Length: 542
Image (cartoon, rainbow, N blue to C red; front, side, top):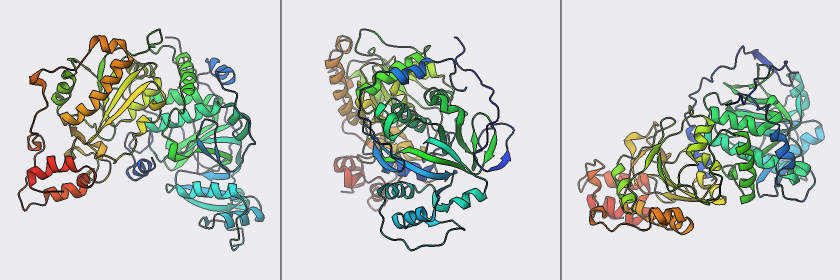
């Protein structure tokens, strides 16, 4: 393999932020790298190695790629706008950020008055500006920027005057910065892919680059750390960010640090113009089929040693794989593989392969793992974001022990629905709460983090539809697995007795079923599930 990455020695740049200390090396962050932040991830669900300098094709692809001719519109320095491919973005003017705080900087008393009028709920941190009584807002852009900033509860957002900023020795990063703004503080692969793909699509949108967006000059991640563990994530960031990677800033403990150049840690990074994606749509990796084509052309060129399924066939090979986790917040295992094996056997499928990808897996390994299957079963896992590399018609079944409606739309399905990927969610399996990796017990939040016991008929209901689609679209599947099996030994076990897999101590007077109903919400959402797997056993009726 030819060397892909050139470690560049770069002279210390002029520091544009307030220095509070010198770091001799970019050491590993003190936080648990793979652990998810509990409260902030719940809000997200409710809403919803160095640069490759020997890759000149990157710049040529962005300049000359298969881009549609789109209308160019006037650049917006502040407020909400929508890209030509449908993504809602926000432009913020004159803001300073760190892992816990955002400060809007008013350059004049008039601008300060505008912010007080259009954003009266924003606290004032300025010691130099006289307090004013908010009036009528006449600036829609300021009002929209305000709504986005105050809607993010991860930061304390306040208003400064320019004099307050200058008193700390701060100055702005000029031009436009891509604000890598996420709930997640630690290194998390799914959030990395989300922002990488958003940045990629923006850089390939002529209308955005020539109008609303303009070129990006910097990348600033005020909350997420630079990914030290996930080489695949680093490679993707370096590939897509291009030249601005040299001036990217990432959280380091409770400060910020530049990835290249100066290793100074600073308290604030100030951006003249910051562009961020609306968090409500941040999970989407593709907005249309053309974006997938452009991305695969780029990815296959950049990751040239990764396996590719490009060719005449329209479908991925008829191979079944089961993805299992070995790290992160809960391994989310299937405790009764025999149920999965029965479901597959009922479709005439007698073998499958276990596969895992982790932070230690190379980019080539992770890309290859998502290109040599036709059907994958997986828990709710950020590794599924690797579906962006799928080239052919394939199917993914996400298995969870969550009640219907707990996750309205899996974040991992937002993108495959624009690819040739059949993505289905198999939920309402039995959660094993004893395996919850967090202190809250996964009973009212993070229910997808537990191990699960599969219910045959719940899995069958999804698998039947998936195989019908694969057989109708892919001759390979129709030839190898033409129809379901009617072997009596493979029939769904009836009646189903949950006591065989879930230890429960319950009598007529026990509160166990009432507690189960309250915590898992099954009675109000899915009466059949509750009455059969709880009520019949505990004599509790929904």
